[in-house]
Image (cartoon, rainbow, N blue to C red; front, side, top):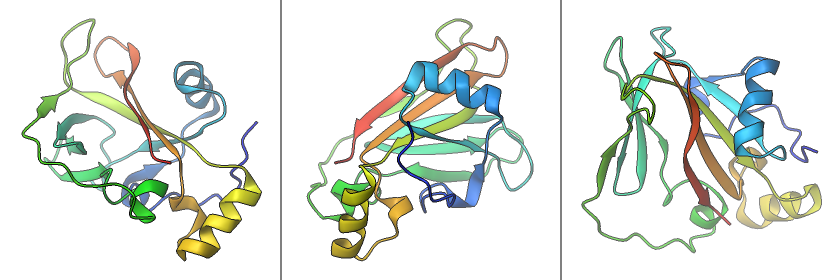
Length: 161
């Protein structure tokens, strides 16, 4: 059951948000969890294939067609813990570029699955933090589908509460 009913995408993905097909939503929820709201990604140039880079906990998408690079998740700016200022920035030099575990390809289609608190708690948080409800997710999941072999997998899950 999805408790979040606002159709607006959260600010971290608003500029690249694409609402996925029912088939895609179903397959993403099978690997990411059925209680989550699912969004897809499309570059302003129209491409839906990206590489994924994770640097110091910040997740970037890079369009394989035009090279446009943008942040789709920063644990220090997105989600309830960041917006309530309970998340502390840690220094790290970690850098990862995703490669398909089946074929080694780096180009993927993106799905972001978010879990929100129950409606009453969501409303209370929104009033307390003066933030829009769509930005108050408590769990962030990044799922990908390889653009070559079609393998789906979750590559990032993080608690944002």
